Amino acid sequence: MAARFEGVDYYDVDSLLSEEERMIRDTVREWVDDEVVPIIGEAYIERRFPTELKPKMAEIGVFGANLPEEYGCAGLNNVAYGLIMQELERGDSGIRSFASVQGALVMYPIYEFGSEEQRREYLPRLARGELVGCFGLTEPDFGSNPAGMRTTARKSGSGWVLNGTKMWITNGSLADVAIIWAKTGDLGDPNSIRGFIVPTTTPGLTAHDQKGKLSLLASDTSEIALEDVCVPEEALLPEGRALRSPLMCLTQARYGIAWGAVGAAMACFDEAARYANERIMFDGPIGGKQIQQVRLADMLTWITQGQLLALQLGRLKDRGAARPQQVSLAKRANVDMACNVAREARRLLGANGILIEYQAMRHMCNLESVYTYEGTHDIHSLILGQDVTGIPAF
Ligand code: TGC
Ligand code: FAD
Image 1 (cartoon, rainbow, N blue to C red):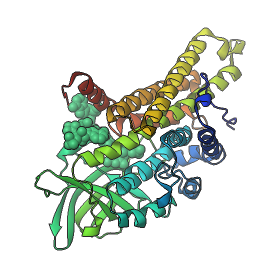
Image 2 (image 1 turned 60 degrees about the vertical axis):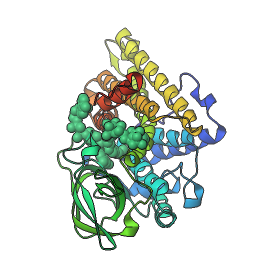
Image 3 (image 1 turned 180 degrees about the vertical axis):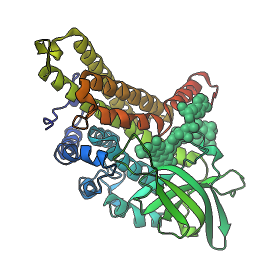
C-alpha cells in the first residue's frame, strides 16, 4: 500500500504559490491519492483508461480549467492549471493525457477558433465530461511534419466531405467528438489547413484501438479513418485558417506536459526515497550507501530545477509573455528530466522496480510516449536551435 504523498519541495516552491493555487493543487492531490493511485496499476495491466474517474475529474474542474467560467470552465490562471496537470500525471501520464487532450486540444481550439454558437454548444458539455473529445493531427506518414498531411476536406453543397487517416489519436475510440485537421485548399492557398468538429457517430468515421503498445497502457490510443465523412458548414472552426492554428493548440498542451512531467518525477522520487530507507541489504538500509545517496541527490536536483522552470513559465504565460519556443524548452527539459528520474528510481528499487505494485516502471514506460508526442525531444531541439541561430534545420 503506497504511503500518502507529502510532496517534494526542496526549495519551498510552495511559498511562491498563492493560497488559491495551493488549495487547487491540494484538492487534486488528495483526489489522486484517494482515487487514482489505488486503481491505476490494475487499469494499466488491463490496458484500459479508467473511465470511472471521468465524472470526478469533471466535478473538480480539471477539463479546460484555464478557460473562462462563462463557458462552464473553472477560469483558473495558468499556474493553477499547471499544478493540476502535475498532480494528474503524478497519478499516471494517461490520466493527464486524457485531461490535456480534452482541455488543450479540444476545448481550446473550440474556444480560440470556434464561433460563439460552437463555444456555447460544446464547451460546457466538454467541461462537465458529458462529451469526450480527441484531436486528429498526426497521420501515418506525417508525424513530426504535419504540414504534409494528406487528409482533405472538400466543399460539397452546403458542407464539407472529409477523407484521410489520423494515427495515434489519444481518446480516439472513447471520443464523442473529434477535432480533425484537414487540407481544405480554400482561402486562396492550396495548402490551407482548417479544423472541423466531427461527431464520431458521423457515417464514414471509424476508430480502431492501436494494438501492441508497451507504453501509456491506461490510455486509449487509436487510429481514425475518414471515408467520405460529410459534415455541415457549422462543423468548420471558422477562425482556424492555417497550420498555425493546430500548432497553437500544441503550445497549450506542451505547456501542460511541462508541468505533468514534474508530477511523474515527483512520484518516482517519493517512492525511491521511501524504499531507500526501508530496504535492508548488507546489514543496513540501501539509503545509507553512497551510490544510492548520489542517485537520490541527482533526482532531487533535477526535480527542483524542473519545478522552478515550470513555475516561471506559468508566470510568463499568465502575463501573456510566454513564447512557443519557451514552452518547447520546458517540455523538452522536463520530460527528459522525468525520464531520467523514473529510470534511476526503477534501478534503485532492484527487482521490485519491475513490478506493477511500484510506480517507477509504469511512469518510465509512459514517459517514453510523452518524450515522443507533442513534438519529439528532437523536434523541440530543432525549434530551440532555430530560435538561437535563425536557421531552420528540420
Ligand atoms: P512553421 O512554418 O514553423 O510554422 C507555421 C506557422 O505556425 C506558427 N507556429 C506556431 N504557433 C504557435 N505555437 C507553435 N508551437 C508554433 N509553431 C509554429 C509559425 O509562427 C507560423 O506562423 P505564420 O503566421 O508565420 O504562418 O511550420 P513548419 O511546417 O515548418 O513546422 C514546424 C514544426 C516542425 C516545429 C511543427 O510542425 C511541429 O511542431 N511539429 C511537431 C508535431 C507535433 O508536435 N505533433 C503533435 C500532435 S498532437 C499530440 O501529440 C497529442 S499527444 C496528447 C496527449 O495524449 O497528451
Ligand atoms: P517521426 O516524425 O517519424 O519521427 C521519427 C524519429 O525521427 C524521431 O526520433 C524524431 O525525433 C526524428 N525526426 C523527425 N524529424 C526529424 C528532423 N527533421 N530531424 C531530425 N530528426 C527528426 N497525435 C495526434 O495528432 N493526436 C493525439 O492525440 C496523439 N496522441 C498520441 C499518443 C501517443 C501514445 C503517441 C505515442 C503519439 C500520439 N500522437 C498524437 C502522435 C505524436 O504526436 C507523434 O507520434 C509525434 O509527433 C512524432 O511523430 P512520429 O511518431 O510519426 O515520428
